[in-house]
Length: 134
Image 1: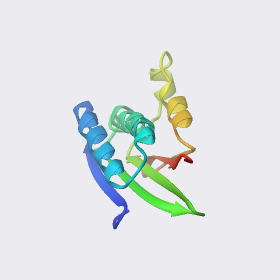
Image 2 (image 1 turned 45 degrees about the vertical axis):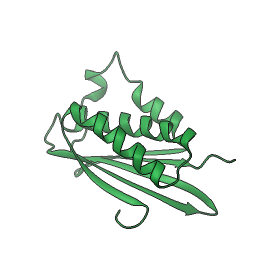
Image 3 (image 1 turned 180 degrees about the vertical axis):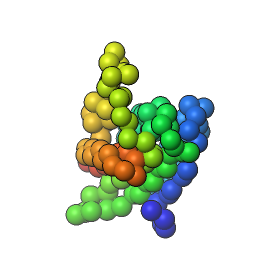
Image 4 (image 1 turned 45 degrees about the horizontal axis):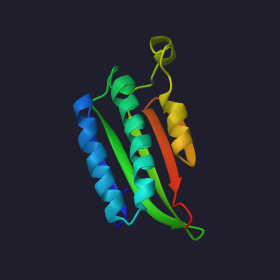
């Protein structure tokens, strides 16, 4: 996702990478004119998706995670689409994290649309947030 209104960032497979990603994404959303009150929700949802990718995807065979984000207008409404991709399949996550598991419900609550794809190339989480009316 390159071009105006879009970014693509590689993220190392280490928890210390999360804070710079949050900061960078927040600045990018603000520069793209995303409403201040909605920036925190997008950043929190993406942070959780990246955290899951670092913890679960990278635990297998991954060199890193990629975050792609784009602000666009569809049917007269602005939206931000974020995609987090890792090369793991998250096999056994439910078993390892039986006492946890609040991240994906939180992502779904903070986003207007969420889609998760698992396949041979890894796991991809697609998040969409619509510009709040007002």
